[in-house]
Amino acid sequence: MEFLNPGMAWGFLSLPVIVFLYLLKRRYVPREVPSTYLWERTVQDMDVSHPFQRLRKNLLLPLQLLLASLLVLTLMHPVLPGVSGTDWVFVMDASASMQAVSGSGSRFNAALAEASGLVREGGRGDSYVLIRAGAVPETSLGRSMDTAEVQHALESMTCGYTQSDMNAALSLAHAVAGDAGRIVVFTDALLSDESVSIRAPEKAANAAVQAVQWEQGELFVRVQSYGLTGTRRLALYAGDTLLDARSLTLDAGQSTSLTIPAPEAPVYRAELLDSDALAADNIRYGMGPAESRYRIVLAGTQSRFLRAALKLREDADVVTAENVETAPDADLLVLDAPLRFVYPDAETTIRLGEEKQASGTVSMPGNLLGENITLQELAVRSLRPLSGGEAVLSMGEDTVLALGDEGAVFGFALTDTNLPVKVDFPLLVRWILDRLLPPRGAEGMQSVCGEPVTLPVRAADANLTVTGPDGHACRVESGTVYDTGLPGLYRVHVESDKQNQDMSLAVAVAESESDTMTVPASRETEESGHTRRSSKDMQPWALLLVLICLFVEWEVSRRVA
Image (cartoon, rainbow, N blue to C red):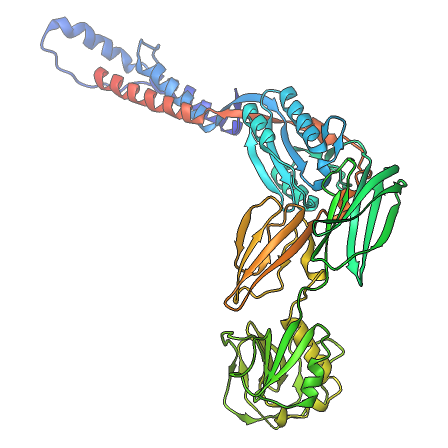
């Protein structure tokens, strides 16, 4: 038995006080008796006239002493010491490189088996917390002393294809472990945290396709070797058509590149046919040339300066129209009076105020335009102040250029300003087009596992369906694909009132995950001796005994009286 508040033991001084009260002189009480038979009892009562008497048999005295003792023990907060144990926190690296095969299985499965062995060998009273370190760390199992539950949680853990945020995972582990817990990290990543134990895998030889690019009729492919030597077979495809198949000679730690003629195709694929440590990086997709060009319709204005500035965008065709009603289908409409760059059929969120005389010099509230666009000595004759959107240019307290979901709006017409003849006017137009027209083609449709991808379409104008490499299809509401956890080719179907379009999105394993030769050294830390002691609180039971004893004492005193 242990006590959390031993200082309350002074309460035991009440025991001799109770006994002393029983020894004190009793006052004489006159009493009439109906018979001489009771005279002997009266004589005994008269004996208490002496100051101290020997204790007579009295059931109340031991009950009151027991009650006082239990009350003091309750105040001392008794606990039963439990068994000693270790608080384990297992951090399981679930990055793509942990799928590398070394020996008879993957690194991740070997880590799970080693963690399972630590659980089987653990002592009575050990507790376990499991943290899966993926792109976002998550607690797979809270603190548990049930070894069967821990083993089941380990068997249920899976490895992914993304990079792991080990810093966030270790921060979570330290918060869970506290000062006495022991953190064990199963990883192949180099860690700077010296306070944790590391269980690292062995090195494994690997080769990876790290680049597939098409440009001007030629396909460029780069293969990187990580400790792997010898020849490897490589197959190159344009769509489903085999372009070339050859053997590459690889040197450990070196990259090998090749370039072959290739026709235009939406998608290209390079595939290493021989097995190595990591299969996920043996196939890589590359995107072909841009599938279409942008169409910009210039309606309601004949400004040659504006038309020339719009044509600086190389992937856009500029078409003129007399008005909006006669304008053909377009990706972007450019209108004047006031000057606007707007999406067709977009809802208006930027509103124009009442016309007024312009005053003040131009300023850039958010400094969005950069250092190359200054617009010094910009003059405006009259303007209509803007409200809503993101302020890009201001004159005094009035916003004269705002950027919103529907496009970019100026608060004046080109005929009321000297903006078109300024040197940086083409740069301003180019900046607006870059913000409103997302990139198309290879650059905008390639990513790595786990990274979100913004599709080059506006979700407000189309319904988007993305089908992953595993065949799972999902709708995209915001225009951004977040579920890119698998490497391979994603199919994007765009459906709108004007057209249906199919695009491809190539997702690959991050290059850093292909390096299966760089692993940390396993180590133990001083935390291995840290243990905790579990205990059982006995104060509620002591309080219950006090109440029982109090009830018995009350009943006895009532009967004696």
